[in-house]
Image (cartoon, rainbow, N blue to C red):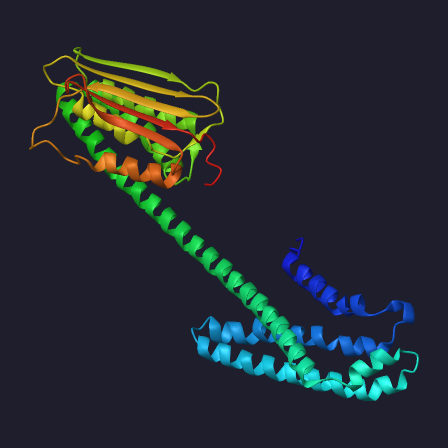
Length: 361
């Protein structure tokens, strides 16, 4: 297995190498590289390095991220001010000892170390405090961003598990509701025509097979879902009388590999047969399912024959399930219009899905 390259670590190492080599920019190389002068200039990046990693490894994680901001600030003030004082004492000491031996340097450069005024001392202390404060800030920012990334990833995992659990619960709610309606239909059919009832049981076994094979899947092929819908419509046709017109217009031939959330349309089709069919009045159900490379369309228009208050089992449950599953699977990638039309005589539901692949599931 190929190991993942730690790009952030490599960038950090390269950055610190550049910082430690930065004193070369302030040394007059025409006079030759003097090791003692380089070591003297190295004290500033070394102090920044110490402040950075003390904050990165200890102060920021242990104090700042734990809400102990006062301790974090106090310890940084002590560390940075102490290092700044030590650096200046080291510069003065090295200037008085080393540069006496550097006869090849100009008299002005020797004097700058020999006559180091107190005013300049405070100036350089302020400069070093600023540099080390910047180093501490960068280390803290990295710790914060890394902690934020870890927390965001953990939250994403929790959210994904929650969504998966909720989708699974919705599937389990769909199946009993659908089966209850289907068994009621077969029960009513037994008293009318036993042969049709037997055919209905065969249709139901086909539906069971689809739910067992695909009900727990994150996504299914659209052609399999359409076959499931067609089997359900065939099952429902068995018990319909002649005054009910059922018309289907299904064309998904252009996208044979399109995928869809399982059992997404069945609740809407159930509602069409439940509320669109009257025992004694002319009724109709028109179902359209079409797809292309960019979208999937499901449009259902049916006559409106509202059930009375004694026959409203599961009323509203199916629509709410459809809404939740659309949000979970197709958030920001769907359009759903539904409601009564034609002076409340017809009911129209139209869903457009702008995702035919469902790669994220």
